[in-house]
Image 1: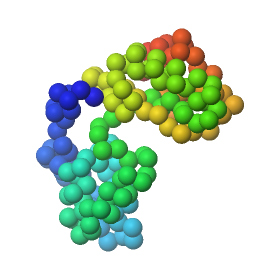
Image 2: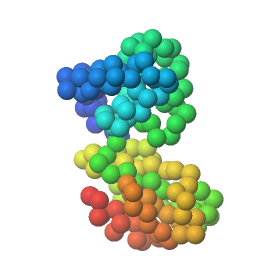
Image 3: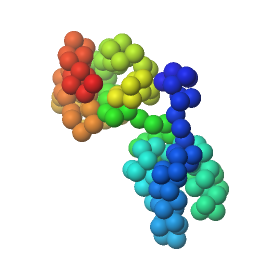
Length: 166
């Protein structure tokens, strides 16, 4: 995402409605076993991402080291520290998909969307990501958009598939 666009992102801690959600999640889960994981998972689900300032806030509120919070965020791939688009495009880089042409799909997706892997389009519609396996090796190479899996995708087919989500 371009640096200018990223600067337009308002951290959820500074938005009263979102701050209220964050505080409620922390309050409801602070005493349960594994509270950091529970809180962070719920924040990811309800806010959509866990920003670095949010991580620090959670650490302070739960009275745990920031390193513990960062450890959870960095270990589990479903956490993100940046807002994502309305739809997430995941290009599989598992062995079968890689050998089947995933690198060409990545280049085509970057060209079509005008973003790099890990970035979101300026209209906040699509986030481009790579993943290790979607479990459809017999259909390699595969592309997953939200919960929809597309198999045996060629670079020529990819723009049409993506257009369905724009």
